Each structure stands twice: as C-alpha cells, then as structure tokens.
Length: 162
Length: 376
Image (cartoon, rainbow over all chains, first blue to last red; front, side, top):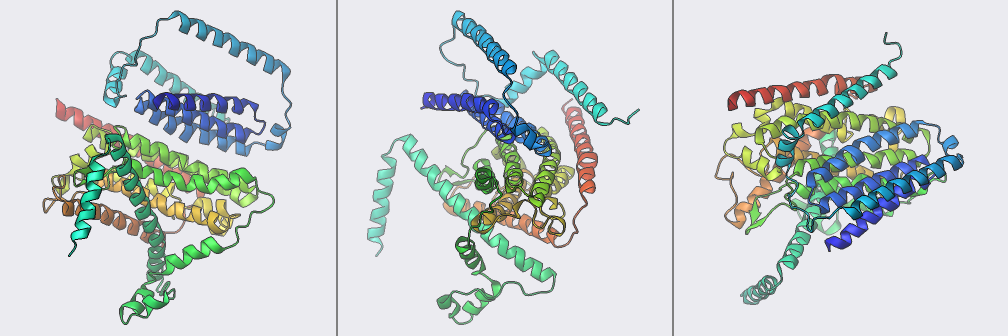
C-alpha cells in the first residue's frame, strides 16, 4: 500500500515539476509547482515526517506560491505567453540536470543504504531539541541569512530611502 | 415489542466485531466523516438563515418569513410559527441555486473557472479532520485524525483556501474579479502571519501541538481556558479570522460598492453558491478552531463535563457543548458584520502589518520570559 503511494506521489512530483517548465502560461506553471510541492508533502507523510509535511504545505504551497501568483498576475501575461523556447537555455538546462542526476546516481549506488527507515514519527519536540542543540549554529546562520535578505528587499523596494 | 430490532442490532454488532481491525477503522471513519460533513453543511445552510434573521433584527425588519412546505405549514400553531422563523428558507434557496441557469461567460479561462469554486469549498471541510468535536461515544474517540502536528495541518489547509479566490479572480478574466483576487491574496497572506504568530503563546503554555492535548490543558476550571490566560492572542486570532474569511469589516475582496461582487462577479448558479457556502463553512471552521484553542473545546468546567465521557449521553452532551460554543462564535461573526463599516485598503494593511504582527511578537516574548522565569 505504502509502496504504491510512494510511486504515485513520486510520479506526481516529477511530472508536475516537468510541467512547470514546459508550460508557457506562467499561471499554469505556478499551479503545477503547487501540485508538485503538495505531492512532495505526501512523500514526507509516507516517511512519517508529519512536521515537515505540514510546514512544506504551510510555507511553500500556502505562502510562497500565493505570493508568486500575486506577482505573476500583476505582470503582463501576453508577452510571456508568446515567449519562444530559448535553445541555449534548454541545452544548458538539460546538460546540468543530467550532470546532477549522474552525480546522484553514482553516490546513491556507491553508498550502502540502511534496510529500513528509522521510525522517528517526526516528533516536533525531538526536532526542536535537535535544532537548538546539535544544529544551533547552522540554524542561526540561516536566520541571519534570511534577515539579510529581508533587509535587502526593503532597501530595494524603498528607492527614496536615503 | 422491539425484540426484532434488538435482534437486528445484535446481528450487526456481531458482524462488525468479526471484521478485521483495519476494516472496522475504515467503516467507523467513513461514518464519522459522513456525519461530520452532513452536520457542517446543515450548519452552513442555517447560518445563512441566521445571518438574514439577525441582520433583519438589527435593521428593524422582519427577514425571511414566507417560504413554507404545504403540509407542515398547515399544522396549527406550530406550522405558521416555523414559517415565520424561516425554517424552510434554506431549502428554497438550495433548490433555487440548483435549478438556476449555470451561465459561463465567453471570455473566461474555463479550467480555472471550474476549479476555483471547488478549491474555495474543500479546504474549509478539510480543516475539520483534526478538530476534536467531542470526547468519545462508547469508547470511540470523536476526532477523525489525532495528528501530533494538528494545528500546523490546520494552518496549512487554511492557507490553501486563498487559491480558490485568487484563481476565481484570474479565471474570470475581467477587471472587478481580478482586483478582488489581487486584494484577497494580499489580505490573506498578511493576516495569516498574524494569525499563525498569535497562537504560538498558546502552544508555549500547553507544550504540545496536538489539539486534544490543548483541550486537556484547558479542562479543570474556567480560568484554565486559554481565552483568559492569553486574551491578547485570542483578540488577534479572532480579528485575523474575520480577515481570513473575508467578512466585514474586512470584506475588501468582494466589496459591493467598488467591485460589484469582487472575485465572484462572473459566477452564477451552483458555482456562485459554492463560494457563498464556502465563506460560511470557513467561518464555522474558524469558530471550531477558536473553540478548540481558546474556549475549552468540548469541555465545560462544571457538572463533571470536563473529562472523557463515561456514557453515551455524556458523549452526546460533549458534542452538543462543542456545537453550542461554535454557534455562539458564529453569532458574534454575524453581529459584527451588521455593526461595523468596511475598512479602507491601506487601513487594513496597516492594521495587519504594523499593529498585529508586532503585538503578537511582543506577546510571544512576554509569554516565553514568564515561562522561563517560572521554570527557574
């Protein structure tokens, strides 16, 4: 049962991901990205990582993608729809995806995988403790990075701020 | 006299307990889901009636008092009384919505035009999956899925609700719906942040994201209810809930005076009804969340109603208490709509970003410091 669900969600994630770049209408692309994110949340659920799944939907599907839609809807869609496929972009894109895929394939093939997934039940308490003990430095660095990005955005959007 | 009935019940229970665990679980869940959806949709239909009756009361009118079913209306005393209450009005409205012409304008984007009303309705129903609507009936717990990340699930689903409105605005492909869609996406994102941050102090106090545990924390005395321990949280949450459900004073996405009807201008018949009912279903979902988080859920602090039910009657009483609290909050929702004027758009954004978000941050900080000081 859970195996079939994995294949369904994995296929949905990949197909929707492909449709994001194939579609010419940006709104369609954005909606397929939402679907792709939602199916990825399904994969997290299958791994018993409920917290990650919920946050994935909440942050990416619920907030980030709504902002994307918001911006796309304010753009001039006609021009985007007529856009031709850029040969250079397509070739380099396929090449880099192939390269990354090869690296993944080799590293997965050469690493002995554990037989079963450790069932941690995605406990929020455990996750919180880990974030504030073992991983506190990366966590703080990430928050500072986000803060810098926010300050940068405010500076860019307020041009008369001198 | 009811011997045959007892026999049938006995047969059914024998058959049921003979099934495997997974089948039993599926059947029980299916029954719970069906009953839950029927109850919620009935409440939605009658919320519309209550809205019309309350608005009539506030504006010194009578409200709906004509719709009648012939045989029932002919019952002496009771019949005319029910008609005057408007009990049959939701039925008449439902039939009207189903039978009206479903007109699709030529200029719309068809796929999204069809999808948007569904996306508007479904998230409201999905939120009920994690809300405990009672303690237990004959040992069967009255919650569909007792997730350990209950509240995050709810917020995730609620945040998907905005797609219905945004896509309706985009699919309609004309000016007013588009403006409505844009407004609503900005509004919902802004207030979602305030809403999400306002409940963090609640979970700091409870120490768990599971909604059943939140209710357990609040049972005992009236002062344990989180509305009294975290009044600021409750205030921010209820105002954000008004904004999230597009109710006055925050109904900018559909403000009739400037945008005709906002995002659902181009919709008719059942598709319009789905938006309309989705709004009320969202209100009920928001009320259910507030009841669970702040008003003690299915508990009452007296009469021994604050612990798990030991009999079927007590279990039913718990469900009744839960529904009663939801109805109380719905009345507040409706009452406010007919009392306050609409905000201007800049006032709305100002309130969300420059008042509520800093306030909820301060609230988190104070709660955390108090808890830390107490733990030392």
